Length: 376
Image: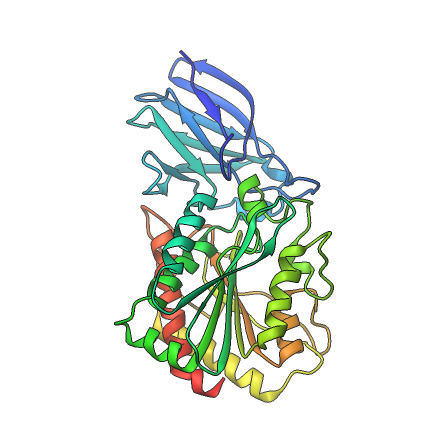
């Protein structure tokens, strides 16, 4: 009997071209489907059944034209047999084909670009957090697919802090980060959480793109729109997710903002700032650098050598959230990037960059924020 491969579930993405039995096991040729109404694709997540005790070769054959083909070199797919622990699979990339090899012990295994974060888990975490003391939940509105945009607010201090993640739905490490942040902020015995809740009002949007998340997209929403190019002029027709969140920000103001992402190609954790906005101030820059350098000193999972090019004066792209918020509110704003690969400075041969490391990084990020909240 040959194997079965399917992605017809929350966050799934793969297209089966062929499955062939071979003398040594079984081989499948696959391709990743585009985001709806978009040319972007790179996220995959699928189930392999009937493979217990067999050598399985999975060939994703359309990687050369993916959104970030440079991200495949030295990359390892994630595999799980219990959908809880996701380890690195044997993976190779050559000539536009990503080859993943498995020999599962059980009859069902799941393969993904990174450890998935389902919409069901999102709702479980929202339900848990909304029941914690001092946490307020608000539904900002609905997406184009009719899903709720959830916001959680914690604390009652004067500083307005906004943490938001997963504008690009395939960057699931961003929502693992958000879960770690919520764990710490909801711990009433945690000194960092107590300080932040006293000094700041913290607004969290754990998933900026529910539609793309459920549809198995890499980068866009239900109508193929990259949300992180909409912050200058969002609309309910194209980007209700951004409009709803930005309107809520306008109502509170923003002193500090962190937009949490994942990067396909750079094997490191880093942040990008708002250099190049028209109204940049020395105070904003000094606080941004202080945050960056303090985080680098606090955790070896963060570094400052690698990152994105810095925009020249007056050339910042104000359609991106970090630049828009720094310009709009005079905020200290930043984009946090985590790798799909691993942190090459501190590699993990079994798990690579992982949900656990994403969650711990969130707790470290909050500790740095607590150290400087009075000055932000």
